[in-house]
Length: 265
Image 1 (cartoon, rainbow, N blue to C red):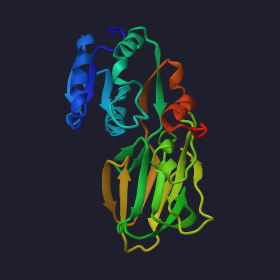
Image 2 (image 1 turned 120 degrees about the horizontal axis):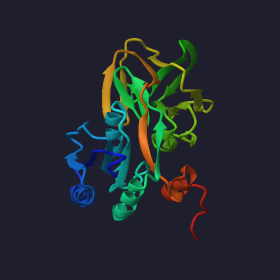
Image 3 (image 1 turned 90 degrees about the horizontal axis):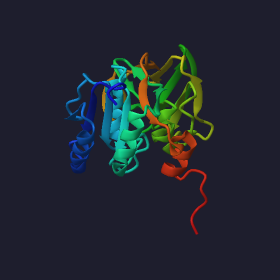
C-alpha cells in the first residue's frame, strides 16, 4: 500500500449517518489514512476514497481533478453508478490496492467559466417554469435553435445520468466526445447531437434580454446574462478502477441500470 499511496484520504458524507462508521472501519485497515467530511475536503493526499452516493463522488471528482488525485468510491447511496465498491467489500478493495491491481482511468470533464463538471452542465432559461428558445453555436457558428425546457451538455461519463433520462444515447467513457441533448423539445425533429470534445459549444438565449440558469453536475448553480460557452476542461477526473470483471463498462450497465435485460416474468 505505502509504495503506491503515501497518504489516503477517506471522505464520508456527513449527511448520511452510516458513512462515518464505514470510514472508520476502512481507516482501521489502512495505516496511512485520514478521515474527513465531504464538507471539508483536503488535498494533502495521494488517493481519495469517497463514501456516499453519486453526489458525494461527483463533488470529490470536481475537487480532486484539479489536484490530479485519483478517486475511488464506496456506494452507500441509492444507485452509486460511479462507485467501485460496496460496504461489505473493504477487504477486497484493500487487497486490490496492496497488489496494485487497478488502473487509473482519465475521464473527460466540462468547463463553463470557472466551474467544472464530470457528468453534465444543464442550461435553462431563468424562468424554468416555461420553455426557452436557445440558440446553439459550435465553434462560433450557429447550428440550430431549440425550443425546449433546456439543454444538457454531457460527458460520456454523464451519458448514463440526466442525459439518459432526457433521451440521450449511452456513450462509452473511452470515447472523446460531448453530447448535446434537448430537454423536452417542443418539436419532434430536435434530436441529440454528439460532437468532438475539442469543439467549443456556446448557448445563447434567443431573446437577449433574458438570463440563463446553469447547473454543473446538479450541484453548482449560477445565473449568467444571456450566453454561456462550454469547453473541455484541461484536467481530467482520475478514477481508480479496480481490475475485476464486473467493472467493465457494459457489465456495469447491466448491473446498475438493468440494460438489455428482458422484463422478469
